Image 1 (cartoon, rainbow, N blue to C red):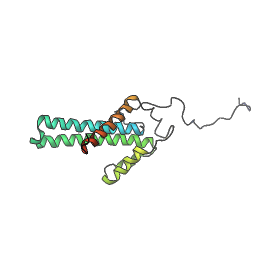
Image 2: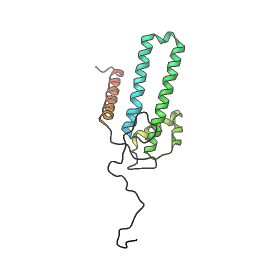
Image 3: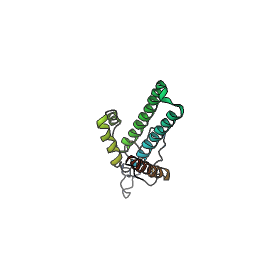
Image 4: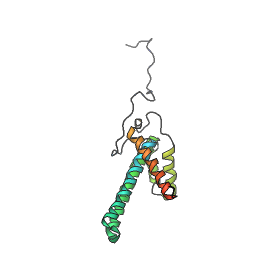
Length: 163
């Protein structure tokens, strides 16, 4: 029975209900991630992979074994490219953009512009067609960002021989 005194019904969902977020997982290719998480999820593993490769090169003298060095370089490069592609796809979802934009990543001069946009532009507020936004950054993500800043400052001090 229809009640003429009931408030009108609406098919419009609220922009964001309290708790309408999720915690992104490192190894999950679905969902959205924010700017700081994108920076940390891409840069820290890449940096650790370079440090590990340098350690292995020095420890096992891979310069004397060029085939092993090339195999290690190709494997590390493919892992970094896959990580960058997945995280960029998740970041594009946060901006409400289609996956096709990720095809720009192999194009060397243009990919820097896309990565810059992914790092600077804020994501959609509330739900978009790709799902709920990621939760607030955890303490570990913030610590990873501070670690990146410390590594960058250390590298600059080494580069310019600042004592």
